[in-house]
Length: 107
Image (cartoon, rainbow, N blue to C red):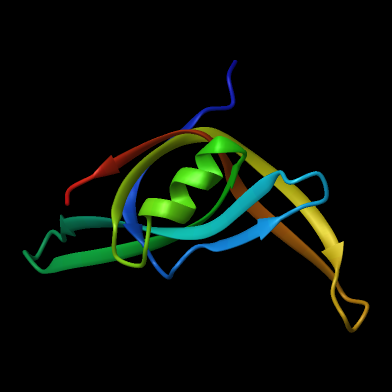
């Protein structure tokens, strides 16, 4: 079995870029995917899902240079889960895609 995720969607806000010790970069962004379907009675339903994405290294450099809010992109990567303690000491859980491939779509 493989842990593989492919998404095509629009970036929800300008990516957050961080440069870590040693100069390595990470880009954090959210991607919206849309699904449209019809109920049995003919009503149209539009559903938007938001996905957290992390991009590392050279791909983060590309994100920093070319990706802004609203840009349509395709990513491929793996689904990961992690947890952390917030400023109030509460444990928070995060599910995100760690991208290893990127395709810029459109203008």
